[in-house]
Length: 346
Image 1 (cartoon, rainbow, N blue to C red):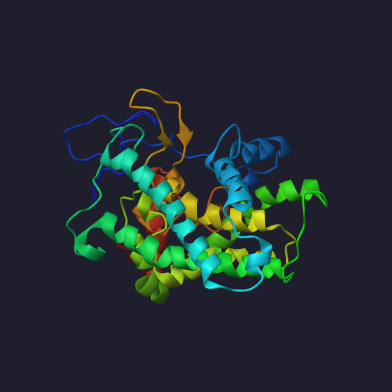
Image 2 (cartoon, rainbow, N blue to C red):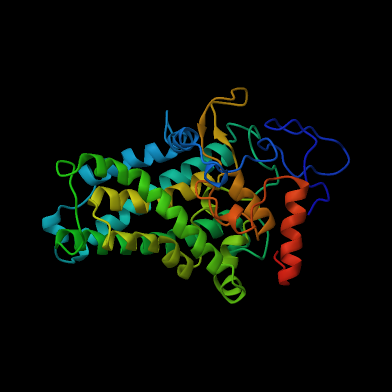
């Protein structure tokens, strides 16, 4: 690890080469990263609303996935008449649909950003390459490793959750709500579900950082210090089960199969985008405009392990002292906590 913890570049711009050692970040947002409005007092409702809507509008990964989920339900999901009973035909169809969907998203990002390098290193967090000859990875290759665990473990478990959910909806075992019944609640669920997902993710993430689970389960994902699109859903099967278990909320939350599909697709398809290693997808290397996909908050977690367990939308990390704001002071705080707890990672 480089001894240079923060680049000397102007925040939000690529760091120049100094010749004095590798800069840690090629690009980074302004430091310190801003605190969540929820964690600030007094609470300012207008800023909260702006922050909430800013994650959706004018166009965002969340919004795209919501549209994809609606299209998936309308055109790519077996009818309730079919899903009322388990059968190999429609289950296989859902499996291969999910397999193709993840391959298109993660594979497409990998091809654009890493194989053809259409952006070069523009807006990339760090420029170290994905590893191609390392015994820490299955097949000694980071990308092959990530593809294997994403498709061989992740897609079957994703499909299993979806199959059980569709079967339960079709048989009336889950509380349902339709657009015509409660249109406001129907739309609100698209906002509520990701927020609950963040709540669930923080606590599940803290759980799998417990040393016995970290060593046997979560370490597989954390082998990816420099991340790529296929890293996001590359996990141990136990972690896949825990990570996607947030859909259990639909047992008590009145919703529609569209919401259930959206819930799962959000958890799965935001993995490749948030782990892509770039702040935005742009058309080439000159433009600063593009689709925001990156998650530097989580990038710090992959670098330093015991910080930023959740997402900024719900500031558990600020409340529980595990927030790293990107500054040297933030890093000292995190390393001090690790030392007190006797925790080492790597």
